[in-house]
Length: 136
Image 1 (cartoon, rainbow, N blue to C red):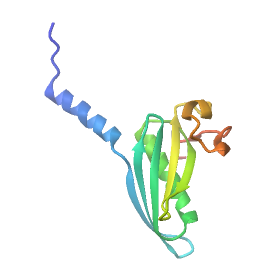
Image 2 (image 1 turned 60 degrees about the vertical axis):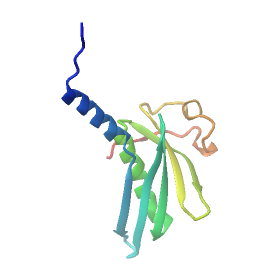
Image 3 (image 1 turned 45 degrees about the horizontal axis):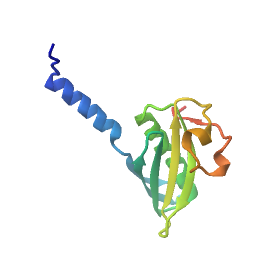
Image 4 (image 1 turned 30 degrees about the vertical axis):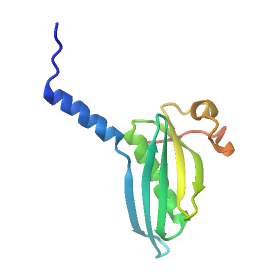
């Protein structure tokens, strides 16, 4: 028995896979309540099986004003991955002041953080609860 895959079905599978694998990149240009402008870029650099790493570049404004946009970026990545929960695992800066974040993703809120994400986790994260990906 021969299996025949229609070219259209094959194309749909390829496009769906490409859409899921596309890394998120977004620019934020927003006037804050203080009247200051926040100009930042959120770029997903790496997507592992249960984590993503992003670089945040702030061109104007403060890092405190960027926090909601960082969480929104990782929430959107969670939606793209069809995951239900996320948690910040690591945060660091490079020599130029860019910030990097590593977020973990899971389908359950009660995962063992150390077991699921390994030893490359900030110690304060152990014992924390996963955050819901869906917006409220």
